[in-house]
Amino acid sequence: MRIVIFANNRLGCAVTNWLRGQGEEIAGVVLHPPSRQKFGPEIVEAAGVKESHIFDASRLEEPATRDAIGALNAEMGISVLFGYILRRSILDLFTRGCINLHPALLPYNRGAYPNVWSIVDGTPAGVTLHYIDEHVDTGDIIAQREVLVDAADTGGTLYNKLERAAEALFCETWPLVRSGKAPRIPQGSGGTYHRVRDVEAIDEIDLDRPYKAGDLINILRARSFPPHRGAYFRDGNRKVYIEVSLISEQGAEC
Image (cartoon, rainbow, N blue to C red; front, top):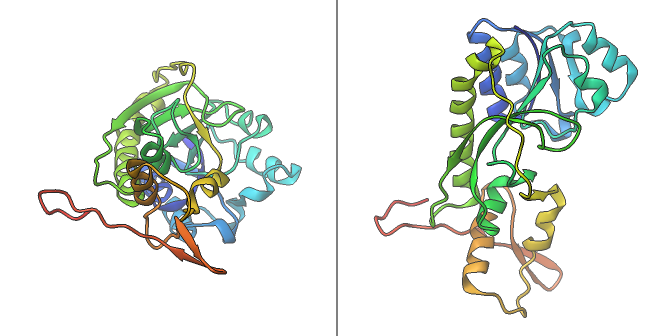
């Protein structure tokens, strides 16, 4: 199949590399701009595309960019940890539509930081492969898998679990997608949605505010994902960041 990849981060690289290894033709790659890009060069190398077929995600709405992607005559777009909304003008370029690999058990945790909110909100965690519509993570589900959240998980360890589960789910489900036999299961009502900036409401720990112990522990562990900064308290004019390490009864550090 002729594909355009919309990808970021290690998982985006892994899926791109796997698809090419399966003999799929990567026609083009859309990457985050350099300031937001992770594993960009690795994704390009895995895709094996020439420079003229690499596109800047921040310029997707420009007619020249849309026309150039359309000229690739790709059948499908595949999004993996891609932080930009694909508008109808982009979705319509692909005869077989676009699919997205999202590290959440939809309809829970649409949007940003599913690994954080499954811990803070106590919502189910998992991974989902779904069709893309004009909204954020609301398209019909192809396949999904639940990932259990352990009491000793941090935002970092849960992210790693979700990343591994997402890669496995994609590889197992791709033959169905490629054959055109993948199901389209409408998402149920309800669920949750979070924007990137929503973590700002939980990150500052108010030293004068009463917290339930469980709620505070969940915030601190959810926002522990080195080297990323997370929860903090203020000491005068400076922020002091908090990173927790959790050790289960068996002695295995998480």
